[in-house]
Length: 266
Image 1 (tube, one colour):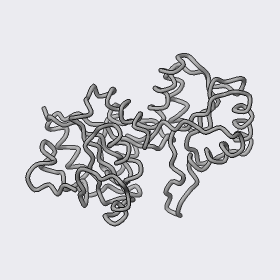
Image 2 (image 1 turned 90 degrees about the vertical axis):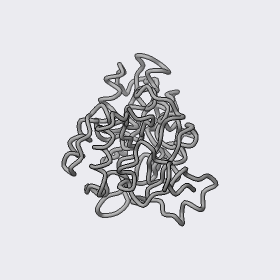
Image 3 (image 1 turned 30 degrees about the vertical axis):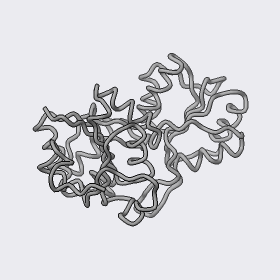
Image 4 (image 1 turned 120 degrees about the vertical axis):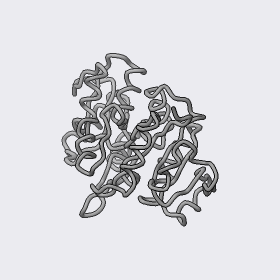
């Protein structure tokens, strides 16, 4: 059994634009061979873990549903801890609505406890207007993640953070963001694994979400350069990851001692 537990981002670390990042399959195989606990994390709230498992399988990665942790699951767990059996008006897709249903929440547009905003490819002006009016009437405002844009083959798409800004401007109410960089998502993932922060590594491709939340949750952090952040852009932040690697492939053969001899520590 490895002394380390791993949390790893998905897009930009294991896959990139629906293609396997070389070495990601070997990395996960090594974790399984060593009985190393791990979770694959994503701020994307559109898909259920079952959907994401199917997506990853198409790239050649076999990740069990129970090893996938999304901002939707973290949001549902947070709301259940705050107000068990509550109600919510939801703007989002199956990943979010399924997680809330499974947490015992009632989804309604009549006097809900919360307005919960997540990712969707079909933001509705009518639904956004309804959300604004419910927040004005007293519903608490929750958003799954603060990402302003999301990727697509055609370019950037407006994401949860952008729509949250619209609703905030209209209502004067700031949302509570559950996903990265809120360390709450890291801590809920740790509780799911029964792991401790001092023995856990967070691997990500973004300084502003993955590394930020990992540091705030007390984890060791590894930045890989196969996604958003570069060596140059990483230097602009006032915090540093424990380790910078070109790719997840650089961890193959050393997952049990990622910071040992040969590691390029920052």
